[in-house]
Length: 406
Image 1 (cartoon, one colour):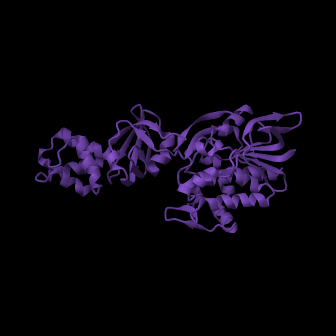
Image 2 (cartoon, rainbow, N blue to C red):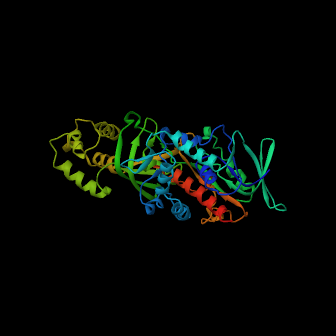
Image 3 (cartoon, one colour):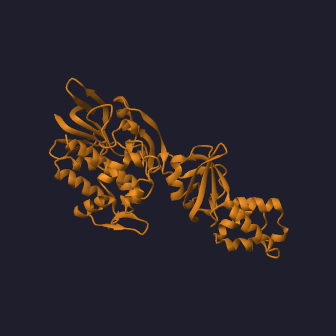
């Protein structure tokens, strides 16, 4: 049977594309036995599906890909996402940090709403249908999609097979192979929205300690390439938290992360202030002076340990080299990137189908007429906080609307 549209992948992008296509025959192929497996894991099963921030801020949350996603995001906004689910019987709640969840905090409610809308739209969903091959028959002006022993045909094809993160959900990079076989360039995939493992990690016993709105700079070959600010977390094996996760997209093995744990905006300002404090507190021990920095006690104790300074050391006994080392530990703490968390724990994938080969106003391929892309298979990745699922909805919606206009 020939369909007007075949969609590969029943994740956030594929489901939203399927329910948004009007008056056309649609086949949705899903390799798993259920739809939306990655959605079900989102937000620890609570599904933070979008963010309430202004759309202008949305464009800043995808690294260098905000401009590419502009048409999609403004074509189907965060407010429209919230309205869609509310009208679908899934009321939502907005947290103080802007993250939006179903009021039940059950990701299954989101998946159920999406699949029900697909059913109402007469979308045919085939589960356990792992696509093996995609080809283009120019003489018949159609695509051939082989899944198991069956080959399906269509006029329009949407590849929404996701990236490579959380491979246990079926995300194995299949979409990259299909896109490449049809002539597209694939930017090298790598994990992102991932915690960062560093060399000689010394903070295992500080697991759970976090810092709010601290400043971090990223260095490569002794040159500063990026600056970030946000919340950071120590775990028992790595560094994490929004400022690390969101900017892991820029980090590579061997890079140096310099962390300013102080409330001061720059290192020089802190060093001047701290030296004055040390000199004026000669009769006090260093540990007492560190209390005034409003940092977790376990953290300052660990810093003294790493710096080789005894807890009862008097400020007047602290020589120049020890002072310098202590200040650097607090405001320019250097950690060398060993690796990023792998696809099993990375929440998204950097890389994918090259955006220069996709029409950003339609999500249609510039290389193959009738071929569309949606979701994480494309080379974009968003910050944590609902930005990736919203982009999946928005790109799926734009691909569908483009097909509707044909």
